[in-house]
Length: 233
Image 1 (cartoon, rainbow, N blue to C red):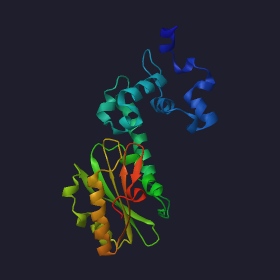
Image 2 (cartoon, rainbow, N blue to C red):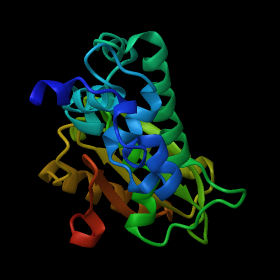
Image 3 (cartoon, rainbow, N blue to C red):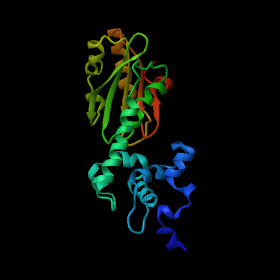
Image 4 (cartoon, rainbow, N blue to C red):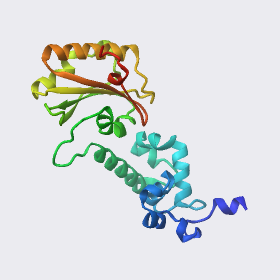
């Protein structure tokens, strides 16, 4: 009984249980992560259908975040994937990245930490190195653009505050939101994060640039230092 279950094909499922049919009937939000990936894979291998392959893929890479972080070569090496399916998966992930930062013709107004995090969380939460980015805002808190200041091993003692605010000065930004990620996935601010925040806030006052927040991005979650009153006393 167990062996027969592990070798069924997608077509062995009832029509209402097949991922593509379920998507057509109920919408993409009704599908599990494995079902969505199975639609991208389209076909399985001997002994495993696309849904079972998708479930194994998620387990092997440690969930969606691990799959997000995986390189093209690592996905290609997974049994039954190959260049075509790996390309489809990486293309879907990149579309997700671009959608997360895409804006309509009118740039978004940042009214809360959640608004800012929504522009960063999808991509930055999956980065394997630490990155520090600055959101430049106009007088109405409308996003002008996002600039990357540092990436790699982000040691707060090596961060030059002038570099953090340089593009804000050049672009005549009225305010900024600073964000960096913890590649460990835990967004809990460190004492160094708080000290860095305090230095950036003080420098912003001297330059007449309001520092609205400092976000620490983790795996699918974030922390607002402003909300916690850290570095903004």
